[in-house]
Image (cartoon, helix red, strand yellow):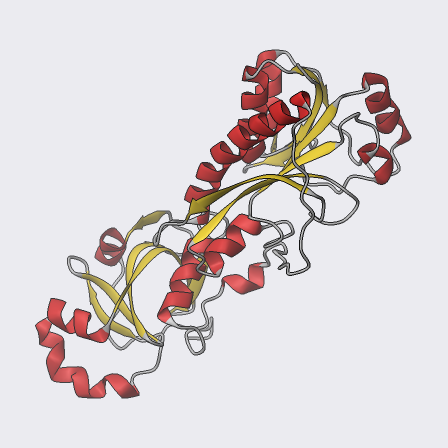
Length: 332
């Protein structure tokens, strides 16, 4: 079995730590981000990785920084691990740390490299409407996800799958692939493939991207935005000057909408002149339908300002959104 230092923070990483632990490797230390205050009471909360490590009695290190941290680097040198496993740790590792382990630092990345190098590969796969993604294990170097690849596993993305759902699936795929990778390293059989130059980036998400651009985005693009930002921050628009978040939507063509609600046929001549972002139909039992470019959005799950997420039916029972209402900026 290999002597390992594991570095990671969120639940995505905790799944990998669990599988490495169950595989019987010697986990000499678990490195994770410091505890953070959370919630209304600002209570200090441990990362999912720390919680698992505490449960199993593993040694835990929580440096504020790893770069230019002589004390931390010296501690890892004393451990002298065969491998450092890095899974969604959240900090860039310096060269002096990368050079410590005998077999290098191994990273689990949530995409099929060289596509989506960077901090948010899972989110961008959904935001861009990709049909497939996957996991790559690789040897780390000083670049941003530029190291030599070891193993890959492709995963199909469901048409309605959210970032949260894909995140959970890839966490398990990544954990199993890491265990396979470590076995190959231990046996001296791990492949090493250089990445091509045809790469794309997956930068951190910005809150400004969450507002729905009814004028310029198609129905499909808006649906991907809703899926991609669920459950991170939620895509939003404004209704009567108040922010409403969209957590789940579907797409219909104009013909499908008219087949579902024949009473709308008498207004079909008006459809070309209706601005995107306009509410076409609103009923607590039948639903909420909004005009978009190249399609109609059927809202399934929504959240009012200072309220909880709920089904659109529950929302409309307490909030009357009239047909013809234009969704858009906070000045409405």
